[in-house]
Length: 495
Image (cartoon, rainbow, N blue to C red; front, side, top):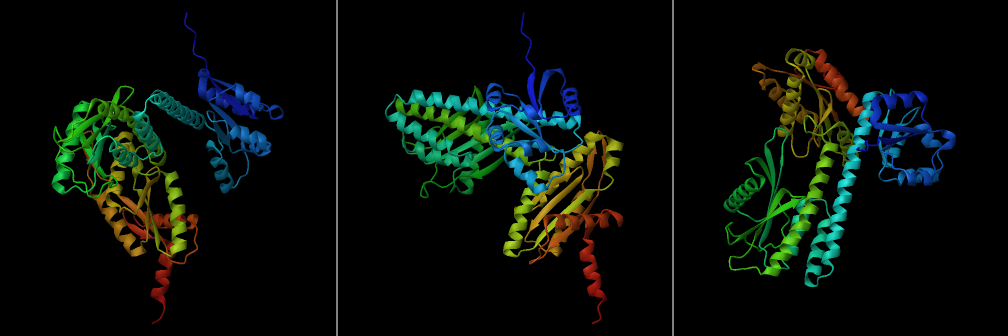
């Protein structure tokens, strides 16, 4: 007889009975909630003996905890804490509390969707911890085995140490080229990583050695794509190219071939996710010990690179909207705060575009929500293709989007906004054999050099401009009413 799976444990600290009932009803029988009363909160010993998935703490309870109890909760690595805002609070204080290790903060009303979303995120974080801990254990086991060897100890330990110092794939690959040069002359190291997109097609990221001319670059791209397709078991449908840091400025890469390129598959748990292509002189032949050391190094690099790719994927998901694949509201708030500091420090213009798709509800009602999602995705693509490298586009919420334009005055921003409006207006959407078009209303707000306006002021001005565009007939670009009034007053002054 099989033993039934034990329910996941959840703790509450001083929760009201109504909230306990709401949590239990939202999560169902797969979870067990233990609520600790305010006069009997858990000790450090209680926390050491248990490992709940989440701990739900009202803000009033958190503020009443002694410093030692707060420290124990902050140091509790595997358990995620959820803050419940149950009373008056200031925004900066909540941000400081979130920085102390809370997974999220929930505002009233605490709905079933909010509860389930918080628990789902806690499970994702715990799963990520388990993966990282598992990889760490594998790395430590490898290091213990390699510690018994002489020359391989120095080489492999160097590779492993340097690879573990970074979570940037490009940095890991550049360091790997320098480390592999201890074994034999390495003229260049390049890499390819792939993963399936949402539609099932394979997307690849290529890292090329610097200094390649156009012909050499084309040859190595073709070689990497062909190798990736063979290892992945299917053609690569889309790819991007990034140059690595130059290790040897005078190195000249040969054309890829059977005697000048060595291909090393990168695998973790039997799954191949990438490959390394090492360029070497044609007359260099590797001995058995060199091949063993190189393959062992590839195993270590695979763990580090996979860890780096997972970290970047998690970070991208946290910073980007899952539907449109552009930045989300949280990353927009962070970026805007940084740009406001630069604006005030260097006295540059700072402009914000806030735009809304006109009558978007009618798209959902007429063609279905999947058609609406398709529209939002395509608008995200238009934004991504239209913005400059210094611009920052994000989904503001629903069918609203926002673009931060550093060092851009109002006239320049209006030109970009008008270009965006026309591209959206001219885009022909097709869904289920039906064609339709949408339009956008865009508001423009600018902070001029010397302005002391805050984040809220800039967003409010952009929102005013958007409202003006909506109320004036939609499908147009307007500046904020404050700027409109200034222009009107200037025009009304006698010469």
